Image 1 (cartoon, rainbow, N blue to C red):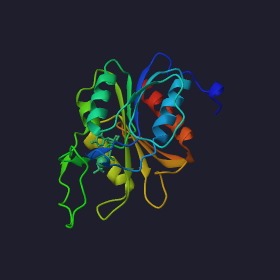
Image 2 (tube, rainbow, N blue to C red):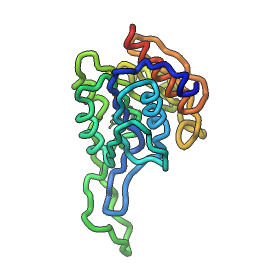
Image 3 (cartoon, rainbow, N blue to C red):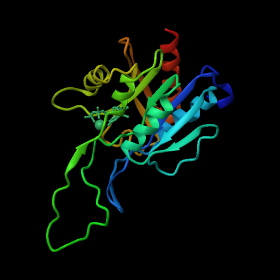
Length: 229
Ligand code: CTP
Ligand code: CA
């Protein structure tokens, strides 16, 4: 849909979207990161602005992306920074969307100086769990606030993509979960996304393969439907 053909159904709503992947430093030059491009989160922020929302975009590392005109941009490098930025932005917000790929673990120690190569193999890198920001936001949620989570899943021996996703929706306690099947050139570093939208009320629907802005429109449609229900 052309921007001028979009509904203004987010008018008056305060929306916070996180995007991109966190980077967890090991020393001043190295980090543990992930392959999130930030494109889906930026598309969500852009579409929300076009549909009339007041938008804060909390951005971790992304590929080079055009800025989202009309949105407030807050930068976050690490999961800890993203956590503070989200808790701050969540105050007074109507809708929170956790599209960012948050590192589950960070190096336990962050070396002050660059780790030098020696004649020996290095010590293994010890890792510490990062806080689950989405779970914290659900825990701290204000009355009526709508919270959307994302899940990138693969099927494995213990279940298929949707089974894992349904369990995750329950575990996280959010209102909507956007599910992308990953692997074999899907979701990461691609222009297109496909998946499912799962709602806490038990409704589920498939999102056809399409651009990330197409998927963003579908997600906002689902959020608006959830609010109206
Ligand atoms: N998330 C978060 N904080 C974390 C990890 C994830 O807020 N430390 C959010 C993501 O932004 C996403 C949702 O939780 O919206 C699901 O992320 P995912 O990585 O799929 O779930 P995990 O609970 O980390 O489970 P796992 O990686 O083991 O599948
Ligand atoms: Ca994870």
